[in-house]
Length: 458
Image (cartoon, rainbow, N blue to C red; front, side, top):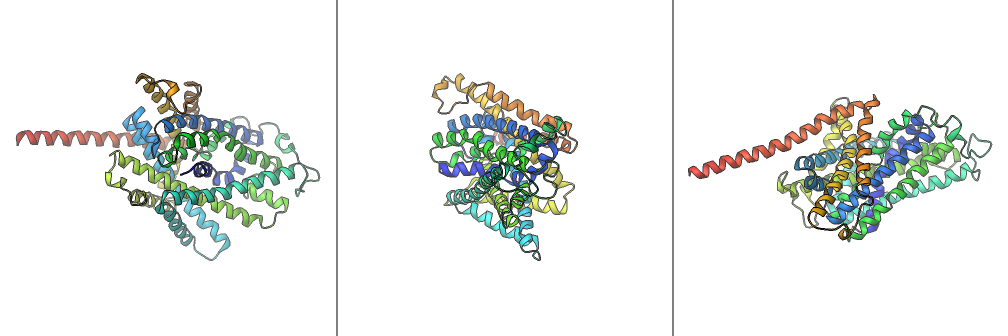
């Protein structure tokens, strides 16, 4: 992958339905200033995590990097758990994304069954990943480009409406920034900012895809730092920019109640075919997320197999360098997640979604802690900080800040009754992952001991 691929993959991974569909609901809950503040804090947390990941991935560019670093610098059980959590995150997302893509198509073809479209998109995304890494990267580049163009157009047209260059229905004068402050800074209280923070962190998941691609990137020593250093700037422009425009043009009480705020603004400006245009953009966003998700989950399985944690044959690649068995297993995982969303939406699927929602924040914590331990080991081995091609600045302040702020995102869930069950599902699931790993290690030792005894008798 080249720098343009990496730039768009890291951007495309983070811009999804969370921004296009759920952002209005977030504004409705926390108010305009509360939402902007939550997204600003979230962007800083992600950037700090990316600075930690930068040092690790430039020093050791590995495909499926997070769990490799966690395995090396935290513990083997943690490495295994991080890989399973990240794999589950994207696999569960695959199931919901294929459903969402099918539902969007039924708006244009109302008499067609949703499952036909879901199957069609499964084939498209599987093919994109099965061809070659370069084919996947090019597909994701164009998917992401459509999203980026749509958001830039939204910010420019929205800003024109804010300052009266374009007429906005329902306003006699240019709205400017009046909607941001007219009901006070925090109309639903300051606590709503913390509740929103949880959603915001989940919305920013996908930025860490830069680390997954490290082993398949050209010149990682120059490409990765460039992508990482622009992370904060991109998140501020695309997320905070569009949220500010939305909040200024739509009263917070009406935001996200009935439809996407993007559609609401475009319709109010009088843009023709606004609904169809945005449905196309949202469809692209969903397919882009599914494309990146299948890539990420496949590389996690490949990496686990490459280390011998799961059967080594899963790591086998074809002539194009694609681990086909890992790809097929990840696709099956997505299909099973899709099936559980239909058959057991209130039980199995609810648990899977709860665990996968928190999983990314735990991965961020693992990245920060891995970097802290890596730097200690690097110096202990006789190296100097100057030898590092990419250095996390202000060590250890930045990695510890990233770790603590990510941890707080998990702990704060206790104060939100709707998201509290996620924590109760996550803790036993993590315990199960550790139990499976160390149970397997104990079984291997037991088998070796039996074989050794048998050899001695013979």
